[in-house]
Image (cartoon, rainbow, N blue to C red; front, side, top):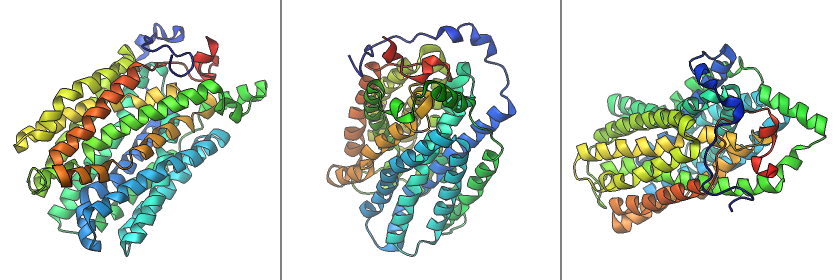
Length: 443
């Protein structure tokens, strides 16, 4: 048994309350549902945009501050390191006072900090700003996903889960296109990229002011008052704790999978040493555009399919199919084959990721959904925070293809295995007795 009385390999079964709901899939979202989702996706898009700016220009940053690329790689580590702090602080706040206000404060915070990175006078200041940015980035995903998934009808969660999560890939795509325009097209400094990030972030904040509070959170508060239950009673429930540990392990594997296939890849494509592909910087960035399109396609397709086949089976399918793509992804000798390998890899990797917003929120009790998905996600990120420095270190000794393969293959296997021996709660109705505590407590 895994995590209390979870049954390994437990099959997905659509809740009785959702059977016969397929005819409602085509119904339109309400204005409030639409605004909640757009704000969540834009917020996550801009988080990713700002994060991947560093990934795309860390060689330029190293040149500006006269330090090594390995040192700059720790800027991404610093950002990832602080994300659990943001998820914890903003998540607990959101479970106590509602989703809306903490989300707006979070967006305002990371917008200002991201903008200030454009004016960092030295590397130390940049690291401090990225530490602070990590707090904002950590708060954004958990709260945004909780609010969006609580607003979206249960029978449509799969599609919108994929669309929400691929805001991350869309942010990467926007960062790549912006770097092509600002750096290659206009010949401007990397600092301009950070300056640009504040505009869409403020648009996101404006949309969030028009979003109402989560009805699921309000129902959970009423239920807790009626039953005299406190948040800590739910938080420290033994089954909730065991499930929390399991989800942290799962998200560690997931984050190693995504960062392992993304963070060092642009550098590998343009590197002329350590087995790099030796492509031009512009060619490497165009390949990044193409593989991010693949990521968006994968997230949408497999997020949608997870509604029919269940979250667990969909994730396992994507992880297993990514394994035979590794040689094409890491060891190809031409730009065309590398582009194809990267495209297919991101279809599968982000196809699995497209399931995650729905999966984590469905596995979370109503009373702590602001805290639970975000902290499990970001603790996994923390444990995967050293991916880029490790890959750079391995590349220095054994070459980039080896570094990619040796870090990607084990985590694909881990994602498939951990998911297979877990459980899902596909299309569970929020705001009900069933979602108040994990189903395992009832068996």
